[in-house]
Image (cartoon, rainbow, N blue to C red; front, top):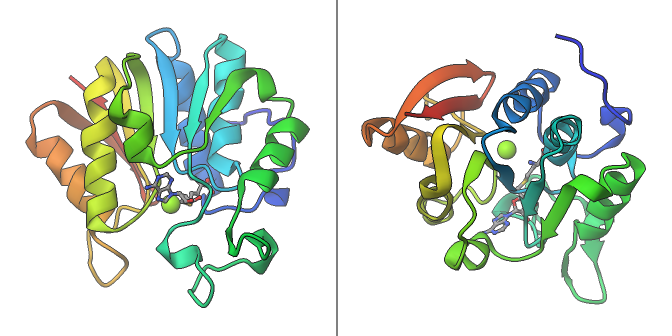
Length: 205
Ligand code: SAH
Ligand code: MG
């Protein structure tokens, strides 16, 4: 599948393979008639641009939830820390500036609603049915469970739940995303559709 993207995606910092981004784009397009799209974990906007480009095409909206303070692995001294995203005045990570820059460069401001808040806060009084949810936020078990509990219940029948960083083999990576992936399957409310690299895609039955 070749898709038209508004900017060179390799200029956008992030943690998403091309094939994974394309799968997100395709699934967002497929579910746009059903309801709004929502992602948890936007970082600098890579997944956001894939999802929102499909939303633009389909006249849908993407809610992009991220406190923009970074996950555990983005903090100073950790493996994925990027000093260019560190706000030394506030002494914390801040990916929101880069996020806004990239969404604007991609001309997607009219299709993205940034929600700059912890996922648990954003989901607390959420009441909008969703056609697709993409979970790529914190990777502690608590964070992943909170994201799954807070957002999966809003997915409409026929809608998509996509979860990033699925590693069935513990030697390959952290197990929290895989744990919620299995929880979704075992709930009987979701069926597995496909796995694209580490992106697990499920459909709400
Ligand atoms: N989807 C992005 C990568 C996301 S990295 C891409 O395509 O490149 C994970 C992001 O989740 C970080 O930006 C971090 O700030 C955010 N995050 C982690 N825990 C969170 C939480 N509890 N609530 C909101 N955002 C969170
Ligand atoms: Mg990820």
